[in-house]
Length: 330
Ligand code: HEC
Ligand code: HEC
Image 1 (cartoon, rainbow, N blue to C red):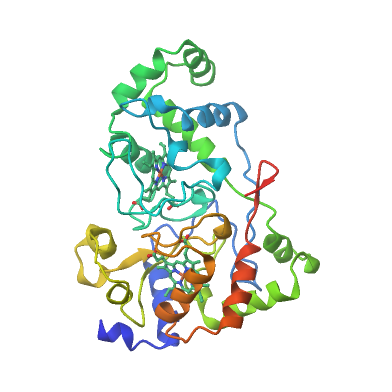
Image 2: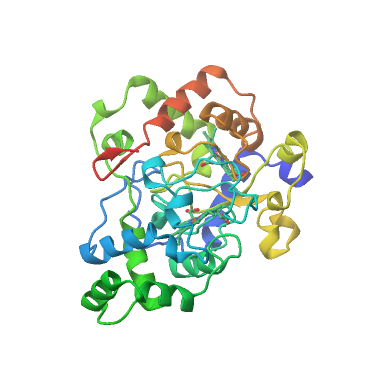
């Protein structure tokens, strides 16, 4: 812990580069490479999406028959009209069980190298298997899902015409994966700026972006998703959990998966795309506003005293990361 606290910003950068080097799937092929000038790349519209698979996947995403008791669909916790998250600090499942993690958005998740707060899942099929089987999510299994969907004649027709089969686990997974790939938000003002439209950002937003880089936020939040591709400890310079109080199981971070002491309180750095539309913030949903979240970051991740004017400028920049989905701003 002491070693961590003593890290200077330079070693922090080195650490991040080190993490990048060991991060297996960082060269994610779907991700555009950052322009030589900027450490963040604009999001491009999804290509080669099969419209029929997409619309079938969209229907499945909203279908509560995916869950054992028929009351919960993916959209229950990830409503697309609400930024792809239920905005709860802790998910409450149908069974009344309160999960310890807040719900991240599904938008642009396909552009992140790893999924979930702990970054424990590296592929969509694996994520889907977990969702179906998780006792507190769908509490089901593929056999039950296949049987349920097969009873619906309109599904039978769609699956037959697209996949030449009944609704099998593979076909359901494929349609949902196609839909998942399409969940991108494009045309944010910041992306227009990156593409050369100087007038897309106000002077304050541009100043906020410069602060975001000069303060060192960019060391952890970079790439096409402004995050989503490295692991870092929450509380690099100061013990966040000692200050916040109450250490919950979920707070131990990647230690939960690896059992390695150095992974205690380490999380996947989340994407900041559309962050203005997805409060509350952090794995514990503890920050209710962007201002609160940036204060925590400046203090605990950068070891600096938050300067109110800088925080406001950074928040303005973060708001310019909100993009469009199906023609509507998130
Ligand atoms: C009961 C609420 C709930 C339901 C239902 C649910 N999710 Fe989630 N989802 C969560 C929570 C909570 C997390 C964070 C879990 C973690 O970090 O370990 C998450 C994480 C995710 C992520 C990772 C996002 C990222 O980039 O970090 C994706 C993608 C996702 N869910 C898609 C789905 C899909 C597809 C379905 C339907 C098959 C679904 N979810 C159903 C609550 C839910
Ligand atoms: C050392 C790496 C690191 C640095 C530097 C860093 N962050 Fe973070 N950031 C993280 C991690 C890790 C989380 C997730 C923590 C959690 O959920 O518990 C996070 C979460 C966030 C969130 C909440 C996102 C969400 O959806 O919940 C915001 C906003 C944010 N950071 C902004 C910033 C800003 C602005 C700066 C610079 C002032 C910054 N970060 C610097 C690692 C970093």
